[in-house]
Image 1 (tube, rainbow, N blue to C red):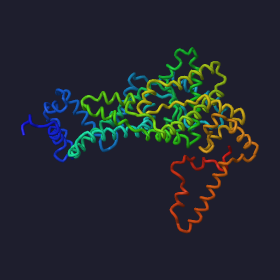
Image 2 (cartoon, rainbow, N blue to C red):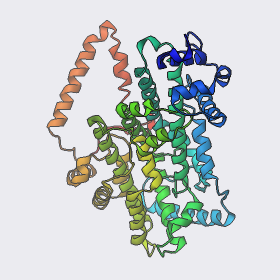
Image 3 (cartoon, rainbow, N blue to C red):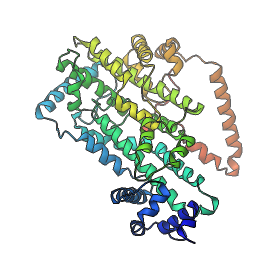
Image 4 (cartoon, rainbow, N blue to C red):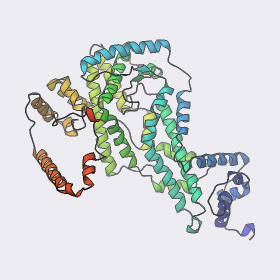
Length: 488
């Protein structure tokens, strides 16, 4: 058949055979490098010069290096560190000494404001690059479900656009598209994390536990920008930020169940993200491996993420309530610890507004994974913790973090009076008031126990499952879980 008589489908089939062999089983980069640019130009509808062909080759080779083994997160780390370290600044001895002094005094004050013990590891000043290194594993964990959805959707979109008889030939092309989608997402995540490293002031600044448990840290490079325009002495600001960071780290070290609980809620939300396939198919229909800007822009803007599902909205509500409880407790404890600071109210309000508004990098993270980590009910939660503190004292308040079973519920944020009444009754040694839900739960447990005993002689496998508990139920860490009935 003469070249001029071949249909576009025939040319595409021949191209795929050259790329992957007749069976479509293996991509051959050397064979691709020897391909005729004119043939590629006819198929893509664009002139391809040697430089463009080289760019295509680099993208394909990068995609095939990562396909089959999941997403290559090393590109995320390289991109993030490149941005974080671009100014080459390190922590000076003066900065370190000033922050060490602030941490020391804030730690003493904090011990007067909370019954939660201090940290086993000394707080420290870290660079932006250190922050990236220490937090990247968490960002990867949170973003991986969305990254996988992007990569899988891109593969499916390509598969749906070719005739059935050519599915075998495009199997590896699908792997290529999956690799390109994953690599692009990993690159974008690296840019977001890198930009966040230029904005965050401390480990708890984002609101979720991104530093290892029990770790407190401040970034001096970014702290210098925090007080600009506030007309507040740096030593006062440093004391407040240090106390807040220590309170956040103390809480997560004490409540060992809390870190997993929060991160699980974030990943539960992320697993519910499904890519807008219509938008993706539109992009794939004009996909150009030498120019990934359009796909990159869609990832950056969140255009591929559709509206939240009902299950995602429920997951988001649970997460926002928990973040509000955490941030509200930290606010109250920090305010009590730093009550000696002359400009306390101004500093606290500035930090609160900064946290509520977020920044460009946090917006970019929200677009990338569809989630903005801002506690909308922060003020209400702080008011609840303040009321509880005044009613029952510091120790009873902080004991609510001992187990996920004790933590206040959303209804307690709206109206703390019932929570306070139960805590006060518990302090007097009175049995907590029962309600219909308590009675119903007790009946269900009794029925389940009776059923288990009845099946015991049969050696049912349910015994082992019942003994282990549900994998979805957050737990304390063995010895840390309190005994006895719920005090509230």
